[in-house]
Length: 421
Length: 212
Image (cartoon, rainbow over all chains, first blue to last red; front, side, top):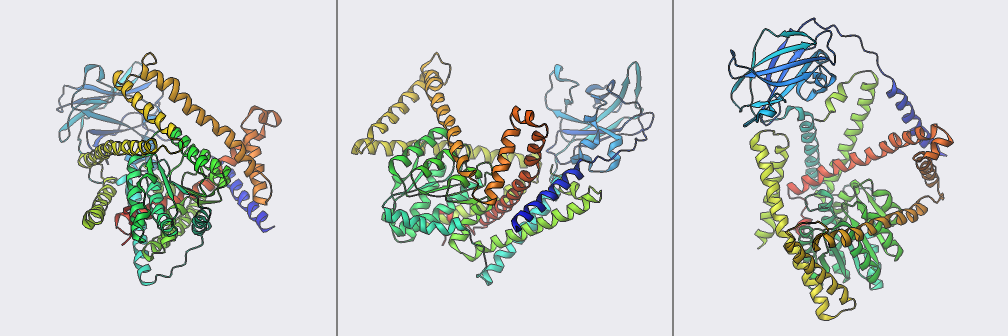
């Protein structure tokens, strides 16, 4: 009954949110001037250089038929060459580029154009939003508005110098959140050194590791550890390798065969080293067999077919599927289930999670994959980082609640602050 | 030896981790050049690693053939196919047109084999769905009902039954499903940052083979 109530409450909140979000606010008509009154040029902010932004006000009567011609010259007196033709559509509104102009309501009244500077420009490319130029040199711009047969040239000439920036201020929100979160994690790692007995909730899949290895030992069958099909440069694979180290230690202690088929040669090299060191660290260097940690192929389905074939022939008692998985997840796990192996899977690929949950005995969902190494080792430093993560999650929940309230009150403050560029 | 196996990798992980963290926030040309260099290094290392992978395959299957372990014939087929494919690839200068041997083997043998493996997924999904949708608990029943709505809402017959069914399907996908997905995503994102920190600061050393 409680579960039914909880589900109904969640669905009601979501339904109300849907209705709330579908309401559209009516906008007041803009008070626009009769002609171009403002025309500015500036270096494009937050870029690597070779780009200039131009901004001018919208004019009453702007329509699809209206076009703006931007010309560029190396001196204020010309000569000027065409750099871009901008139609007076929605795409050129400053509102569409908050990464350059922020979220000011006044942006509705302005248009912009971004011009690229290129070292060499063929004639046919002229007037297509770029001009021949270089960083550190001043360029001059002229703006003309064409409305059918009517033509208006803005009386002023504006100038700007392109250059690279040393900090992307559009990512300031991201930077601040990253610093706060990193600081929190480091703080809890240090706190954990003083108080190593941190409470970490039980993760059934990781508690079953010992049992799964023991079962394989009793049955005299091998254990398969599949570290996903991702390269070493992705975090799920690193997390999988971390788990492999913990599993390999226990396997070496139990004197069982651990087979690690790899799809990536670099991952294979790392896995070989990890298993070798794990065997040595428990005083069983003889337990390591290089041929048990091997490369198969980089082709996704050929790899899957090979692992499936090995499973059917060797009938492992336990399968670990940890790391990054795609379509092969079900092909591997279903074959493993058909041979009666205990299966423990862990991935952050949420599209594959349902397949693992359905076919495996235990599944580490998302963040549990990353927590596994700390959970299995029980090292205070690693557990401290998990506590830091939890604090980060609490902070996110707080942000979501505040955002819900602020946004429901009609303010875009939180949405704008959290917008990613 | 310990210095090379532990200290050097830890120092490299720390320096590159910190540099790449700040590189993300620095749009300057110098910063982009660092990123390009690092990516090129990664590609060079990957190319060398492929040779290690090749050596692993040859070593493993040659040993099987040499010892004539059960199933050694498969190893012989694998090594023969690898040699033939490599020679054909060089002979055709990498062209994958079907009128040359390399292209013919790729398009007429490898691609169908891959497609066969992929198409088996349909049957596995059927059996997985059967396991998932057995309405033994309240949650499983909820899953079953949601799945039926989404499946029928995705095909024309859903619209024929009632025009509201595709809307209900969209609502399930866009709201409850998206909320659950984002919850997982938030947890994963924070866990990724924490794991990265543990690696950058040398707290997590499992990937080097051991802790101490």
